[in-house]
Amino acid sequence: MSAAWIPVLCLGVCLLLLLPEPAGSEGAVPIPITCFTRGLDIRKEQADVLCPGGCLLEEFSVFGNIVYASVSSVCGAAVHRGVISNSGGPVRIYSLPGRENYSSVVANGIQSQTLSRWSASFTVTKGKSGTQEATGQAVSTARPATGKRLKKTPEKKTGNKDCKADIAFLIDGSFNIGQRRFNLQKNFVGKVALMLGIGTEGPHVGLVQASEHPKIEFYLKNFTSAKDVLFAIKEVGFRGGNSNTGKALKHTAQKFFTAETGVRKGIPKVVVVFIDGWPSDDIEEAGIVAREFGVNVFIVSVAKPIPEELGMVQDVAFVDKAVCRNNGFFSYHMPNWFGTTKYVKPLVQKLCTHEQMMCSKTCYNSVNIAFLIDGSSSVGDSNFRLMLEFVSNIAKTFEISDIGAKIAAVQFTYDQRTEFSFTDYSTKENVLAVIRNIRYMSGGTATGDAISFTVRNVFGPVRESPNKNFLVIVTDGQSYDDVRGPAAAAHDAAK
Image (cartoon, rainbow, N blue to C red; front, side, top):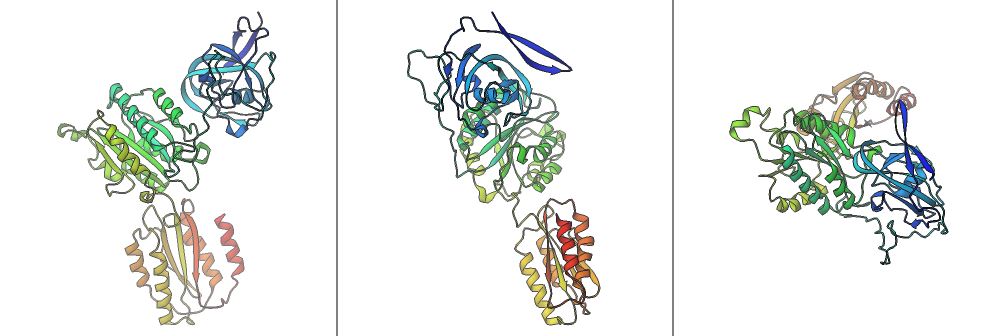
């Protein structure tokens, strides 16, 4: 009997696992499978399979390196491992136990993905060719022929196109909820995920567990089918510890929603926070951070604190301070975890109502606009008032707030005067009021110097702001100094 040595773990010293060949494998015909057949579809400890040619590398779903989570594509893992090329071929697959932390590695044109935990694994080696050749036509099952008609592999579903959203479920994994209610919570999240209509062109979901330390269980890009998401939710284990919901929400806003983890451009970012009882830390600051990152925070509260427990709650109004907007739309309450099916559809309807996602970043709430207003003698007082009215009409169209759009104004002649900076006023009413009360300076016209002054003194202090910067110059004529140089420098500073 020959054998294959497969490295399965490297921690300073690389351990090897000796995998014997299946008995009677000599001359056996490998079982044809499809590009999308997963390790969990093969119900054998070891098997010879035949991968088709022509699979698209970007469509492979692979988790891990050398040892792969069983939810991975077998053929994708074989190409990633270098066992076969994209032209297909025979592969031998060995079932292995589940593990923690599947790593992400780029190999042979495939970027494998990370996965924090999975219940089963597999690895692959080069298989016996037998008598059947790999072809471009994929056969649709990984199971051995039994005389029954083979099932067709379902095509990737596009999902509910009317509910495009990137959603993180932030579940409570603290001792406060306990193991039993934790499982009921997972069941509810699974029902919500199923009704959302997850798919390649529909909603994408991921999951984060809040406990002593937050843990991202899986990202948006990991699964794009409801079946896989439900299985992943089922695999999440209870962590325990304090319910540091604020810490977990802040971590989710900052680390979960990135292009590398699957966030799509122009799609609302949503966190659905489940709180059983009350959070054990400050959640208000985390809510502010989430809004700054353009994340719409929903709070699903279950079993509110009883009067005897209120003394343990840092802020009884934590829901109102954490949600995207305190208007009732972003908060949702369930009395307990039993009989929750009737609460699924109303929550899904909220998550799919995109026009209500007021914390999503748009042009109207994620810009810094500085108005550079000509106050020279050639303008005149009456025209200067018209200019201020023009500036006010532009400003009032934006969503001005401490976490939204910000407005500043500078008046210039030969000199420059900052009328107000980006951090002076955080409400639209205050900004419009101060614009109306700007006093006319009168003097010469030095637009170039004014541009340099504004870039340095107005935009400089907000250099680290996530908002995009715009400078709007309102002037009536020619400047007495060079404008082209300062304008080019302003463009360079914005890069």
